Amino acid sequence: MDSISMMGSSRSPVFLTASSSHHLHHAQACFLPNGMKNGVGVGDAGTACLPAQPTVAILGSGDFSKCLTIRLLRCGFRVVVGSRHPKLAAQSFPHVVDVTHHEDAVGKASIVFLAIRREHYSVLWDLKHLLEGKILVDVSNNRRVDQYPESNAEYLASLLPDSIVVKSFNVISAWAMQQSCPKDASTQVFICGDSVEARQHIMELARQLNFQPVDMGALSSSREIENMPIQLFPGWKGPVLAAVALSIFFFAYSFVRDIIHPYMKYKQSDFYKIPIEMVNRTLPTVAITLLALVYLAGQLAAAHQLYYGTKYRHFPHWLEGWLQSRKQLGLLSFFLAAVHVLYSLCLPMRRSERYLLLNTAYQQIHANVENAWNEEEVWRVEMYVSFGIMSLGLLSLLAITSIPSVHSTLNWREFSFIQV
Image (cartoon, rainbow, N blue to C red):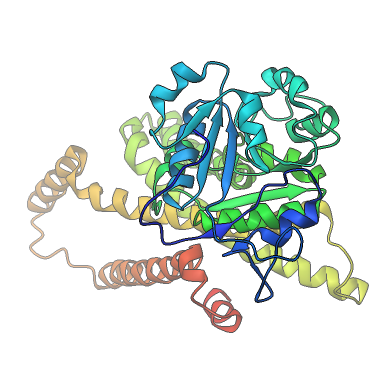
């Protein structure tokens, strides 16, 4: 099947394939809706580019290739898929998709998506002459961080020096790829490549697929892009370790003071307090400490600038990382404070609390005390609860404004007013 038509498409972008010439500027001239460039139709010899649907080739027939194919078809592209076993692979693709051998697929498009693993890059050696001058989009990922000395995209560029390698679409999952408007996944597409024109092509293609392209510069950034899907919360490692360390320290302190010391001195067994009461005493202390660390970093940064008399001097590495972790520290503080509220609400439900209440009532009757009202203690507890609720409300406001969707609706002055 030499061509594919999608009826009812609302888009008509054009990308004319280079038949005899592989110059990138020619491809750039035609990679615009309706073949227009600066309001004038552009063609091979000055004639207008006729409106036609673009053709994109995909090498590989796995899950990502299938989802990318569906996404391209929905957005009005023609897709040709290259496979080692085209007859078998054709059963998994829509009938409008041309599933053929690698050689045929490469010859029908100027943008080629490489949806195969690095271990199978050897199959491209026989296609080297066909891939010359074409944009080759590498979407591969590794199984672990820095698995190879160089990134997959850099290795691919060394294998095919006459092709234009662009790293992109590797951070988009197959699930997000097949959704028209993904609600539960990021739509950012990180793009890097040594050719500015090629990056612009892929960025425009990403926009037409309803993704948000992010230009990461030269191909040397591909290692960073390839590590993104593998790393698990890289920005949260330091804040979480800090929260865990503080929790262990304050819990150990409370355990020694309120459990071990009474047991050693008075033979009083209060070990039943460990699951709830000890944890509940630790949570607010850690939350307040983390919140203090959020603002302490800014004070140290200001002191650093005043000491050197300039704001253009780089901060130390440890302070730079601390400043970049303030959002995570604040959100962890809010989380621990919210858990503290839940624990506090559960305190009266404990069986031990009921026994203590009965014992207190019995002792009051035995002492013939009719009214045990303590005005000072009542006021103190009332104030504690009131200030606690107000503090949680303010901390909730700080946490909510740190959410990107909320943060984007505030200007710089509004955000600073709330946070500072």
